[in-house]
Image (cartoon, rainbow, N blue to C red):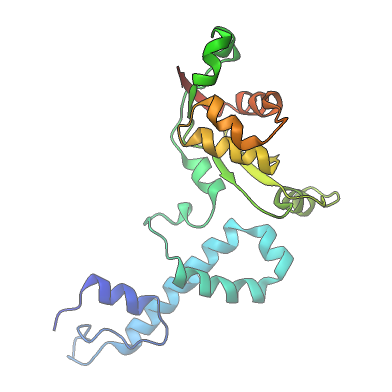
Length: 218
């Protein structure tokens, strides 16, 4: 009996499933013990990868709880890339993303004012936005650098301006506008997502200073 990749993967991620019927020991018996050892090793490796990727969460909830929740997470969200360096964190993806040449502020200054609403931006592969109803940047910062935790919602902008990822706080409005721009929406339309009185200046300054923008079209 042959074991399909789908059957193998399903059993690998479900500790309650028996070893696939097609897996046999050299003596012809079902390879139950060997498969259980392999399954445990896979789960342990993925848990270790998540523990490395989320040190602040590990610190906040405690190692035992973190590893228990990691066991649930890895079975619900197994990696879709064979390289564990990409598993579980935008900062890892940002670190390993392809290089890209950023635009300069002069490129924007050269545009006629009436064309600005029509601009669409290209973003570096290392740029990610993580929205949240909670002050996630403040929580992360307080547990890595110290300080107080904010009382308002914060999103997070992850970029790689040089060699290592940078993490900056965004307001919910800034995050929404940035996500709209990242989807290819024209600037004028994207700004509508920021609400009345939205100030583009600070967001644009941040994106330019972090080398997040790599092209613009009108």
